[in-house]
Amino acid sequence: MPKDRKAFLLRTSPKVMAAVERLAAAEFRSVNAQVEVLIREALGRRGRQIDEDLPGTDET
Image (cartoon, rainbow, N blue to C red):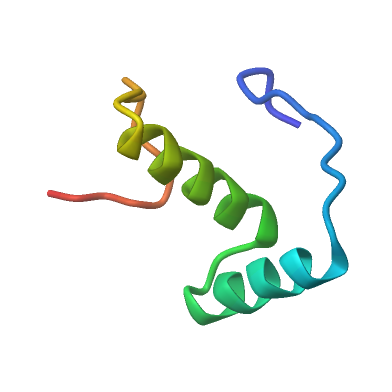
């Protein structure tokens, strides 16, 4: 695991996990990347912007 990433355990319901897995597959992402995207989107909606770019989402 790269040094700039922090690992953590996530416990969630099977239905939530299944929904995330379906969304990740539909958007051609890993479940891990999809969870990060969802967290970043939620933070943005709450006014908490992240300074760094999300890997794999070049918007040029």
